[in-house]
Image (cartoon, rainbow, N blue to C red):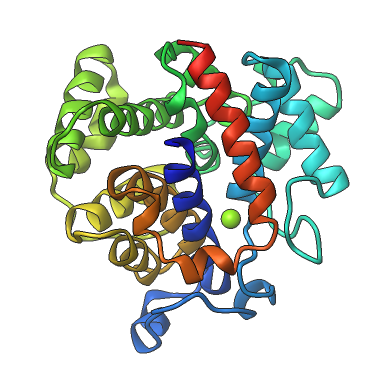
Length: 302
Ligand SMILES: [Mg+2]
């Protein structure tokens, strides 16, 4: 099964980063994360996932239930998460949400249509749609417009949409081609540069396009997250080191490690993910069952 490679890789990365989310790099440098920990920033038990995973699972569940991408239904499932703690594995239920996501869901709750709910401002370019877009990479006939629309449910600015398309394109390359990580990234970047040719947004991706990733921030801006993810993948040669590298950059550690872990899981495979870490994830059996149902949907949609 391919879906669990990326999705479990993603969830384990999320859980690895939760205890140190928002911790500065200077503190992390003195206390390097080397294992799955508990408590920390949100005082959660070991193996607790956060909003990144909840919204990813909500997206998968909606697509499986509807047997298609139904934008309103995805938003309905997001509301089930924030209002009823669905898709959480924490004893506290939902404990973390980004401000742009929160605003968009409020817009939808107050009657805006799904595709009119997302925030469009330049400041609405946190990593909140990038962190839930991975499931779309498994759909064979997925096109850029659909990826953009799924981003726009919460994050409707062009930069966030392009970031989601680039991420899905890298993941698809890993699913389809036998190449090095650097080659996958380059191939995807070339497609994006061609597709969005002339867009003034492309300049924001130049460090990724040019593999010039030295001064990393790790903070929750979609571009900083992407840079952190690509750097972590390109400077390591296995799943564990890649996600630990993403966490130890600091900042938005859970999202950075989750997004990195999704690609690392696809590239290195499920068996490369430390089984001790997988076993720490509460409700993992339900996730694996959803992965199976999602894979069946993807196979049927070919
Ligand atoms: Mg999170």
